[in-house]
Image (spheres, rainbow, N blue to C red):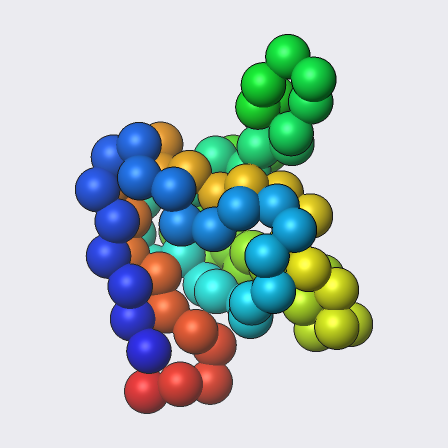
Length: 78
């Protein structure tokens, strides 16, 4: 499965259930919810895998937002 995001689009939100994704193109911001809003934790680059906490049955720990247009693919899915 493949997903395309425009710049500033939210891909998933902290607390949601989901699966892992590999960034094919673009940059994804991983943001932590705080009382003041979302705080940048990390930038994920092409080749990075995000959402690894879901491999342990956990919900997403961070909110993922496209810093620039992105293409993501689920690992192992053609």
